[in-house]
Length: 207
Length: 312
Image 1: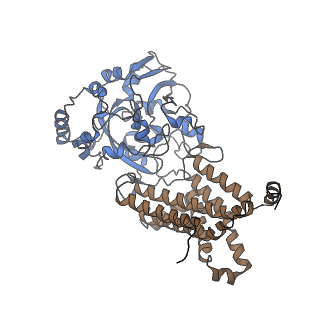
Image 2 (image 1 turned 45 degrees about the vertical axis):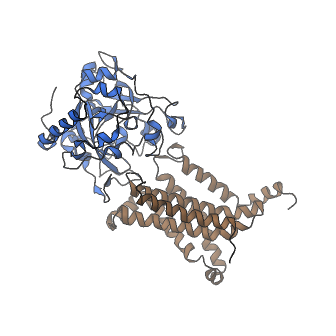
Image 3 (image 1 turned 180 degrees about the horizontal axis):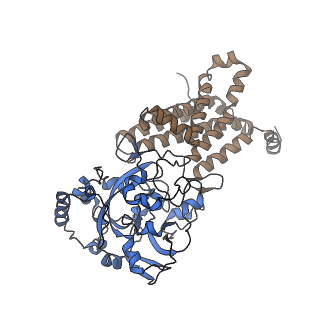
């Protein structure tokens, strides 16, 4: 039998139990009186969380020499896309009842929906090319495609922040959670700049 | 008591509905006018009320009122938490008695009223109003209260008074959300004097025939049904007549998104939400949002010379 590592179990358990819990809550009437919004918000939050976690894998290796997260990166990214897909499906189907003209109007009139839609579309190629065959076939292009996540992730956080009542940049209103996500993401992206060499040198002289 | 002549007959509660309501009131031992008694028993079981005939009442457009359960468990009340379902739990021990409201500013008779004084002075009536949140969800709510106009007439605004400013209670030890540095507490709101004097503008003290629960803004809140919900300030401690347009909490935070007027208007979009449609709580499909939330007949005249895309 194949042996699973604790980290591997945690990743899969988180992704599936969160979905199971959502379905359980829906069927046992534990959602709020606005259940469609609950679905949208909870799937959205899981998508953002998983995406940020997938971006934490490389720094775990860079700074702590812990290589296992690198093997979990693909699963985290794919789960993020899975939740984003459910999120979008709920939006167009349950929320807007596939009323495409109303959906189109909403997407183009509301910057936060536009940003969300854009980041979702940009995530699709990453999901599609996430398998080894594509990695081999696309060579250097593969890396370039997957580096677009550095652009997508801030868009996703912006979408999250703009969906709240408040102003992210002046830190007013209901923006604490998106702000914390933005902070973590900024650190994770910073960890990929030349700064990482300096930090690594001062942190681990034995390296 | 003055009644405006322009209330459509459809808005008047049908006789059988209010008669059955009276039966319920008798049956449950809540004699009409004993609101003060009800205040002594704020822990009366909610289930009893939810079963009331009020739950089969409709607004003047024929839409059923939302359940007591939904109205008291899905609340935007950031002084407690931004989690709509979390408000009821956090607010359950909130002190609403004793409570006084200071009414002053540009008035001839400034006065501080206790809630019990207000209930004695102004006859409480039931008003079934639609509430449209700026977040694009809505409910139909059977409020009990009295027109703000009656209170304002009692304190007699001077001719310099042009606006009314409202202030919520600031009590961080009981309202954990007020510890958040992200909001300029206390909550404040405002109305133009003619808006405040409109008969639709209500000071609510009750819900479903019972005293309002803390999560719904007890003991005294504003209800302005043709404006987005955030205008309907909760737990009021101060009402002030002023000459200049007062600051409001949400326009302080984001003035390009939350205007002073905040009239429900499907033609003027919030920059981040569609205002063209809404979800009525309890329904799965979206419904179109009505200009002035369906109260255009009574209030559109207040804004007849104004560009509502500028004064949003």
